[in-house]
Image (cartoon, rainbow, N blue to C red; front, side, top):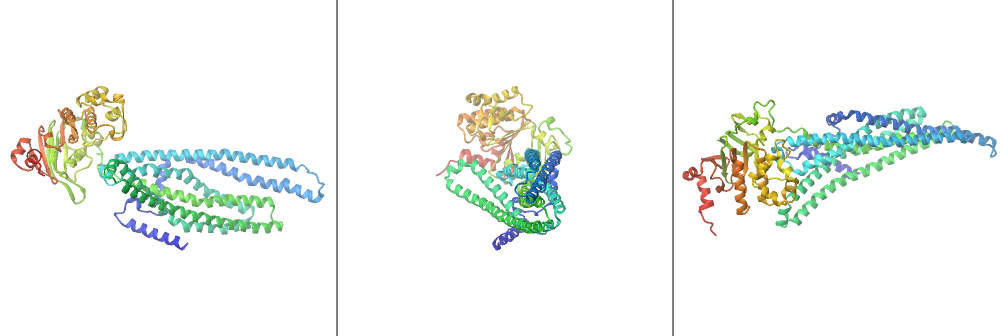
Length: 628
C-alpha cells in the first residue's frame, strides 16, 4: 500500500511538472480529476441526440421498476402462502393439508417469471438503445473532428506525428463511445437508483437501513483513495499509444529506407521499447483497478455481514418477517451493485475525459491561414497576375526563411526559381498557394491580397505538380478527377493526351478504371509524374506550381515529361521550382534565391552575362569537370 501511495504521489508531481513545462507534448498534460467545463462540452456535442438519451433513460426506468418488483413478489410469496402453510403445518402437525397455498404460490411464481421475462426484454432494449445512442454521438463527433483536421493549415501538421492524429480520430473517439453507451446515462441513472433504494430500505426497516447507510461511506472512501491515479494512468496510456502509432506510421512509410540501410533490428528494438512502455502504462492501470475492486468487495462483504447479524437478531425476536428480510437483502444487493460499479463507471469516464481533452485540443485549434469573412474578389475571374511584395516568412519565430522577397509573375508568364537547398524555393510555392501566410509583406493576385479570397476557390485555380506527387489507393480515374465537378470526360481525355499520360493508361489493364496501390507504388517515377501532370491539366488551372522532377528518370521518359510540362505551362501563369538549370532556359524570368533572399533575376542569357550566383551554378552543372 505504501508503494502504491508513493506511485500516486510521483505521478501527481510528474503531472504538475509537465503541465508547467511549455515544451511538454499536449498528450502528456493532465487536467483536473473532474472538469465540469469538459463535461459540459461533451454534453453539448451529444445534445443533438437528446431524444435518444431520454429514451435510454426511460428504458432504464422501466427496467428498474421490473427489477424492484422481483424482490417484492418474493416477499409476498414467503410472508404470504409459505408463512401461512408453515404456521398451519406447525399448528395441525404433519397431517395438515395444503389448504390451497400451492395454488397461491404458483400464482406468485408465475408473476415472478413474468417480471423476469419483462426484464430480459428491457435489458435487450437497454443495450440496443444505449449502443445506438453512443454510435450516433461519436459518428457526428468523428465527422466533425475529421473535417476540422482537414481545414487546419500545414503549420499545424508540421508539428504533429501522423500516428498521433490517427489515434485521435479513431481510438480516442471510440473511448467516448464507451462513455455514452455504458458510462454517462447509466451513471446518471445509478444515482437515481441509489436514492430510490435508500428510501425504500428505510420504509422496509429503518434500523437495518441505518446500518447500510453508516457503512456506505466506506465504499466511497475506497473510491476516493484510488481514484487519484486513475486519470493519470489513463492519460499515460493514451499518450504512449499515440507515440507508438506515430512511430509505426513512420516506419511503414519509410520501410524501403529501413531495408536498404539494414535498420530492421534497430527499428524492432525501438518499437519493442515503446511497446514495453505502453505495456507498463497499461499494467499500472490494471494493477490500480485489480487492487481497487477486491477492496470494494471486502467492504461489501462487511456490509452484508452486518445485515445478517442485525437482521438475524430481529427475526429471532419476531420483530421482522423472513420475507421482509429477503426483500431487504435483495434490495441491498441492488443498491451495492451500482455503488460497486461506480469505480468501473469512473474508470470509463476517466478514460473518456483523457481522450476528450485530446479531441477538444484539436477542435479548439484555429487555422492560422484563416478564410476571408467576406471575400472581396472572385479567384475564378482573375487573369493570373501574381506579385510578391516585400514578403518575409518564418516557420519558427525569429528564424527567417525568406527576407523581403519581391517579384511578379505576369499573366501567362513562366517564372522559374533556382537556388541551393534551403534557399526558400518551396516556401515561395507554399505561400503562393496560401498553405502559409507571410510573416510580413503580402502576395496579390491581380492586385488583390490573397487573404481576401475564399481559400477553397483560390486553390481551385492552381495546378500543382510535386517532385514526389501523391497518388491515393483507388482507380486512376479517381486520382485524376479528385471529385472535381468541373472535370468532364472530355476535359479529362484532353488532359491525358496533352500530358502524354495516355501512354501510361494503355499499359494498364482497365485503363482509367485500373486500380492503383497507395502512393502509386506499382508505377514508375516517370509514370507517376505524367499522371500528376494530367491531374493538374484536367482542372484547367489559371496558375501552375511545378516542382519539376526529371533527375531520376531515363532520357526517353524525361523527354515525355518535358513535353507534358510544356503543355501544362502553355498560356498559364507558372511558378517553376527548378533543380536542374537545363529545365529553366525557356522561362520568361529566372529568380535566383540564396539564403532566403532574392539575389538575382532575369532571363537565362542575362544571368549568365551577369556572372553572379546563377553563372556559378551553371558552370558547376555544365562546365567544370568532376575531379577525383
